[in-house]
Image (cartoon, rainbow, N blue to C red; front, side):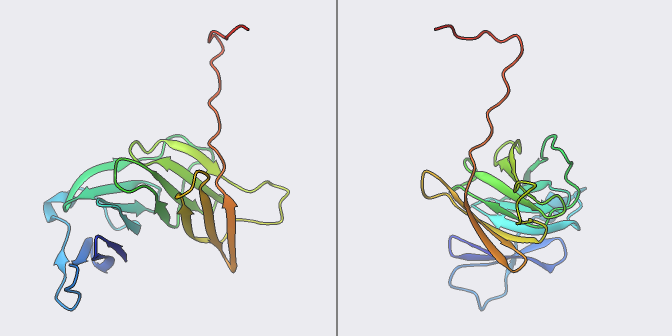
Length: 185
């Protein structure tokens, strides 16, 4: 369940459908939000989580994110190359105040990591893991929240019986190309 602009959205109560309860009318019957023609040739049976920021994002267990707007399919984000590859994810979290900015954070318990994606392109920004010699393991990730209201975002993770809090690491810098010109002093 998610709320946005006073409306309540529910995924999973009806097959392949999002139920929308309009603001102030929660006692009324919900509206079916997805246009049936919009899911043609799309398998929604693997959707495991939903988030709303004006558009609706549906996370599939393979890490792909389906984006819908006004009940119609808009696009699909497929995370780029990442090692190890994504096989099964658990949930996700969106930042930003609309579809044109922010990030997507996907929980991958199997590989003990959080994957940060660009919200518009699906490009992998970084994978967040703990050091191999750390006593903490991220093998029971169930929920995430990112507080991006300050200049240094804070990430909160529910990992089994633990709640972990950490400053979000800065994305790694890209490698320089071998033949790229270098600046001289």
